[in-house]
Length: 215
Image (tube, rainbow, N blue to C red; front, top):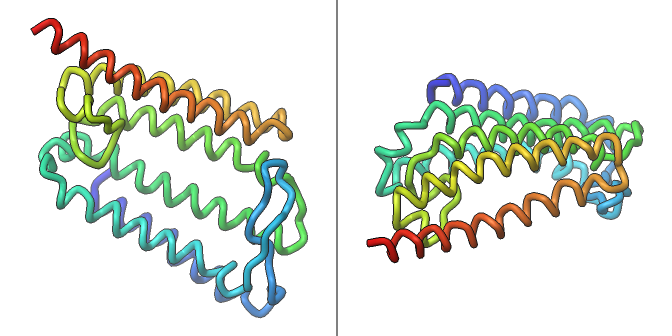
């Protein structure tokens, strides 16, 4: 997707969020549920203004950050090599946040459900496309698996991201199981992604050590 088309899609999502917030504002209670625990039970509230408009504000700030980052990266020419996939990822992140926004709205309108269970497929899609993105990412300072060792070597970067792509896709599959096992959904999301991140850090270090020892 081109940067222009991605920007149009993202701004349309944000605008739709604002329109929904304005439309629902008179109907919402003064205080709304804004946070859920690991079991999907509500444990936090917020005023209805922030409940309806915080997510659009966060989305806009993140979008501006995503657009700004490639402009200041010293290796921005490398980002251009996978810019289409990066743009798709931006749209995916915004769609993910919009999905969370819609879930919170339905919950506060009285449609009670296990929100973690409903988030599981969204996380699965996000992790899967993150795997696609990093398989194509070239060495840069902001996007990808950035450790001291991947940033130092193109070879270590490529090997780490090749493995990372497979792990992220595996994490996506595990996250999807949260739909079937709602009480374990949060653990099926968090444990695999944390374990994968830690493993990739160690892997990149070991690959770098092998590289410099072979010189």
